Length: 449
RNA sequence: GGUACCGUGGCGGAGAGGCUACGCACCGGAUUGCAAAUCCGUGUACACCGGUUCGAAUCCGGUCGGUACCUCCA
Image (cartoon, helix red, strand yellow):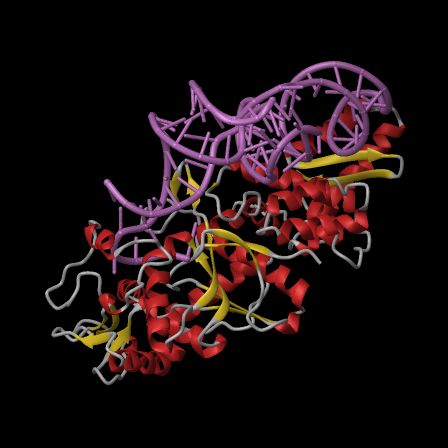
């Protein structure tokens, strides 16, 4: 079997992947903060690493892969949104989580083995913070914050390759009188008077809530152990989030690593700029689905570039993705998929998740429907029947299938009596309604354009 | 300023010292009452300047340009 090769951010090298425990793989993927609908950038990360998930399941067996994707359900933005909308925090996070899962479902992202919520692991976070304090890596500041003391870790900054001087030279470091060092970051913050009680938890340091980074350190330790195989997320998380996770986990666990391999996907761009919640230039997955784009079309578009490279999201890309899927559905035509995934496609995906290469391989399989289907379904595509793909998905004001069939019958009669004028009228009427007719020896079929 | 990533045909996008993907679009042809779909044919591209080499888009050095990160972010 071909080796799986992955670009490890920690070493900046493509490495052959070997699990810490032979035959068993543990992956932790940073999931969303749930206060709003997921944007396409969130979806990109989920879809990119869903390919990793699928590959690992294929190569190691479903029962040997633990794939964790967390939910951050305690956070400043959640509190702010809750106050702003008048919705209780629990209600807001539960609804947002469900929206997120529904979106991923539309994008054919596999369910994960564990979906820990931060609020369920407060005790583990507190325990870890206590260990960090005991070991001299953290302290309670005069303002009540518990802070990680960055200079206590001599090799801090390995993942992002930053020296502490670089970090301090950065323009946005929050200088606080209570910090011993400007680069120290929060492990636990005290509840403020105007914050709701539902976002506060008892701790040895009084009512408060965890800092963002400690969540992932505590949850990954609980589920995957002190050191695990792969930690993944967007490349905007390299610093400070992942760097700080590493600091906390390694100092608390006294381990040489947190995760052996670190994977980071590139940002989704819109008109040359990063799509992000803070810039407000984002589409939600819901927006695009609502415009009539299929989940599979979005998935193919998101996988059409290499996961590490920036992906410029455009209308043209969506059209291309849709056309490519049309051609695959047509070539497949519902044949029973082959048992094995074609080797060339597997090889491509094993090579640092090279999905564009995998798509190119699928394009060469159009003469072999069984293999084409096996390959595409391995990539999470071609999940519908060809009939549903071509004829489904109409909206309420579109012509119904029955109405279309009736017009096809009328057109067939017109053609039989050589009344081509009427036949063309019907074709034009259907074209207008977004329906394309295809005549063949076996009769007329139709699809929604 | 620091840390990374990137620059490939009209567009998207792999590849990675000699065999020059793949898709979309365009154009021509076959086919069709007209279409659609399909099939056939048409494109020799790697930012720029040097260097290494028998040979460089690929390696090395430099230049220019782009993007991200530098404590909200996937």
